[in-house]
Length: 355
Image (cartoon, rainbow, N blue to C red; front, side):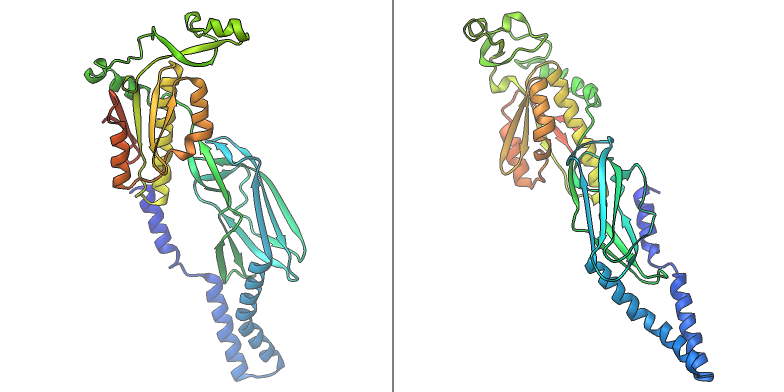
């Protein structure tokens, strides 16, 4: 039985569990009604009405707390790294005139806190405020809501519970870890017969520098330095090799969005890890990789070295996985079909394959 199936079963039976406080309340109501019917007297009536009015009074208090409880949460940055902690702050404030109690917080499996506080129940007096300084860790790469997602308000005895989503959600972009997870597979693809016939090969140095330039980086061959520009301006620039579109390897991104939320997040995490691994494979060797993706039309991004990889990783990654309709996917693959080598990266199964 998978973990997802177990969670579904837990959710199914969670609502069917007998709530002991509610059973006790019903018994107290019955007992107080019997006492009033058989014995009467001031004490009996006070007890009966106290038990009877507990329901509307508790509901009114919970509604008041919902209106007067202010919750804020914040991070130092919204650009996070997977499995790396960042400073986090949660502030709860009671701006009403009644005490607010039975406050509990909830988050999903994508988020973890250094000091777990969601199992605690908080109480606030009128006009009081509580701050929680903590550290947050995000387990999956991608764009999603992190931190506290919902809050629950309870009455004194826990008979009634009102759970709602908070307004101050944290929308974060979590960057994947750069690994060599795709190196073996991409090497296998590029060593096929189709690739060997390509004009461009990773193990062949370019002998014909072009007009485009970039800043000199340690390790660049001296014969690629633009010496005339250096003599004129004193700046060390490197001339980039001339290459046609057909000389470049292309990577076509095919996101997939038909899974349930938890499975989608796991697949997106792996999809992004594969993507940055392939991009870094080319960037390390300073060879061109043209990434095709769909975002309000077919777009491209060229990775040909550490600098362009850094721009991809920090600035562009969150734009590369818009959900695709069949027509969008057809347009995307049509644009990339002119390359000598076109590789598909499918989020559905995390596979790399030749187009």
